[in-house]
Image (cartoon, rainbow, N blue to C red; front, side, top):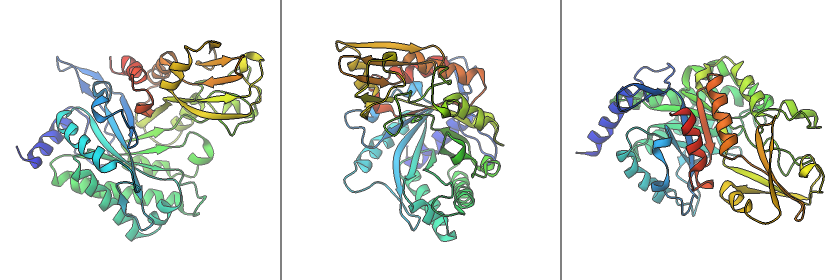
Length: 386
């Protein structure tokens, strides 16, 4: 079978399974089927896979637990060109491995995530030529590696670089949607479009959300980094609800629940809004032995993967605690003066149940290689894909 026939056949499968649609500007909710052909879920489970995943290879991904695999990242030049990677990145090698996997996993949608964390995307989006080049080169990479859609991670088009960034963001996504639809018609299928989005109002309010709803299939809300090394005191990375004993002023805003309710109030279909969750946490050092290390001053903090934290739990002196309101765990060692905020299987399943109760579109995780045991994505799948 030729590559073209494999690709076309795969698109037809995805479309028939409800994972892709043929009509542009319509919500394309995911719907898998079980062995009897009955609908199993309409929730997305989106896992980001970074190009720097190292020993965690494309073959280690639990595809049966995912609806979408987002490869991170392709990068943006100021002229709009989307490039595979920065110098020294393993992107081409890893993407060739994924190209093989895409042909073996027709029930998973593979997305290329295009990022920019400076001003390049603002530059690219500011002109017609830049937007056209961005879309064209992104689609070229998508077709070359047999992927199913594009995810855009611009942090953030809030007007901080250019005043008209929010408007230009809409125009960029419209052009990308247009070129994806043209490519889809030519390839006998359809391609998806998503974004990674901020969890707090100052970065949400500038967006033209109603217009974005017309072109996006879903929005991955990055519900993490609510507290960290920049904070005044130890706190939770991604609390589901506000901790009733939190003394900080912003406690009611910096929660998953507030973020998701805020997005639910935007003019966008609720089933497009996907709850993001972290597969990492923060270890705060120099924390005094009071309130089990919670809401205390600290000397510094480092990021720790879930795999690192699982190992830390077995070390002498570390005790695990659970906050009944925030619905997340933490570790504390009075001997070492270390407070660790993270999500485990319990808190991850709590968030998945929250998605079900509130009719959101699914869950996203950043990122898969931080939990090579695949325990956390398995917890999400247990709730959302049962």
